[in-house]
Amino acid sequence: MQKIKTARFKNINDSLWYMYVPALLFIGFFILYPFLNGIRISFTDWDGFSQTYNYVGLDQYTRMLSDNNTWLVLRNTLLYGVGSTVLQNVVGLLYAILLNQSIKFKAITRTIIYLPVIISPLIMGYIWYFFFAYQGGALNDIIMLFGGDPVNLLGNPDANIWIIVFVNTFQFVGVAMIIYLAGLQSISGEYYEAANIDGASSFQQFKKITLPLLMPSITINVVINIIGGLKLFDVIIALTNGGPGMASQSMSTFMYNLYFSRQDAGYAATQGVLMMLVILILSFSALIYFRSKEVEA
Amino acid sequence: MKKKLLTILAFFLAVIHFVPFYVLITTALKERGDFSSKWVLPSDINWENFSEAWEMANLGSALFNTAFITFFAATILIFVGSLAAYPLARKQTKLNKVVYYLFISVMIIPPLAALVPLYQLVVSIGLMNTRTVAILNNVASFLPLTIFLYSGFIRSTIPKSLEEAARIDGASTPGIFFKIVFPLLKPVTASVLIISCVYIWNDFQFAIFFLQDRSVHTMTVALSRFFGENANNLQLVGAASIIAMLPMVVLFLFLQKQFIKGLAAGSVKG
Image (tube, rainbow over all chains, first blue to last red; front, side, top):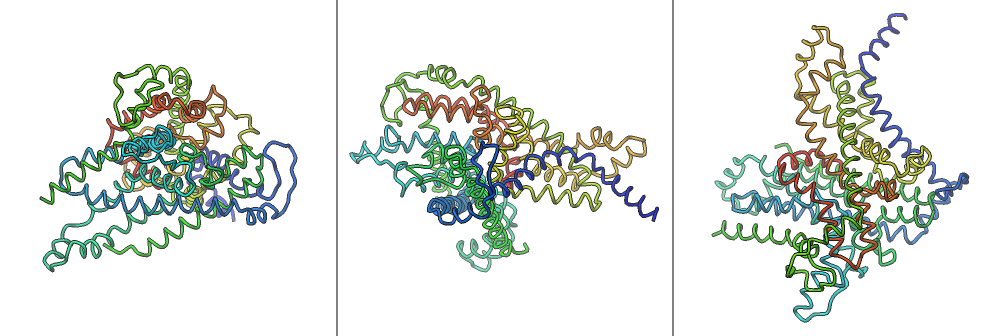
């Protein structure tokens, strides 16, 4: 008995646990505690500043399901997430294939495409605002030069979601491009030589060699982009502020409004739980699906 | 022939991707009330926009706050993160395995989804509108990734024999860590520094909630307020945007390779 005790004690000392206590405190205090507390608050009618509140059971959840805004915002969020993911991957892969060739300008082109990654999404949003703005925007300057009528893309609920997807893609396509470039460079040239001998066309080679061997890069990119797109916040604030009305709100901006403009903290926490579920389910499904497509090189 | 076409295509892409920056520059350099096309360069460059934006948007104080928060958050992150990673990488006890997976699984919690309780916590501990809360929050949010990167590196590249030799010489474990292991971690430390500096410098989601008082505004918050008040003076907003992004852009142009490598390592965080 004594022996087991000392062995266990030794084992604990062996863990050098005191070295990660500070990190555990940070995570516990700022991430785990708020995470669990958020689930609790989602069952209350808290307004965000009062000392008292009531537990209301599933009321906020039934309210969420019958709230039209929930579905509008969820649709927008999915468009941001899935739209950005598809665009960033298709465009990022095309850029990577082009810039993997030995051609002039490729270094500078890569730098310019990558540059927005290190700039705040809020600032990129403002920069594109100068481009798309109804009054004095660069796009309308061109349209009017050719005698057309100025278009108000940011104020148009059918168009502004796609403008936001475009701006988000423009900003982060550099990340996808870099990951695909690294993936392309890791594919051995022997496969292509063998395929050339067998007389396979470029398209067949792309489909049968490049794409399957690039699967790990695709997995990483899809998961990163989907999480980034579903969390979109800064760009929306900069370009449309969620408007007109609710038209371009994402789950992030909707939660922000519920909490700070409508003092509806309990409901905001409920929307937070939904957002967490949406992100987890989509990113894990994507991860599992694309992992299953990966082949042994 | 094919190569020429591809070269032209690459050049064309570079031009397209430069367009928004060109529009930003022409916007920022024009006089107020100059309604000429955004595609036309200003007839004479109006540098006063920068000093005017600097004064009006309170950018001096915002720059100080941003630099202060970024510097301290990155320093604490490197210290706490590497210290935590060492036992998790070296001592495969049951406890340590559990703790390691706890750190890693925390990465999947989207921080914004816990906004309401986090805000309540910050108010209740009296840290609203302090630079401290921005520092602590950013540290917590980047710690899992930092620990992941450090422990992976220690496991795969730092030879155990070095530490064993030091142990025979009678050095204590923390002594071994700081004198022998930490200096060898430079490549990951560089990545962690780059990831944390870029994201914390550009942070808006947290800053807009917790730094609402003008005296603690960071660059992004100051800029968003300034835009709200000056939507009709886009040239000033443009000038302020250039000032806000310049430090990171200059660093990036000088340290491009390190930036791309570091950010690729951190992209799992998204």
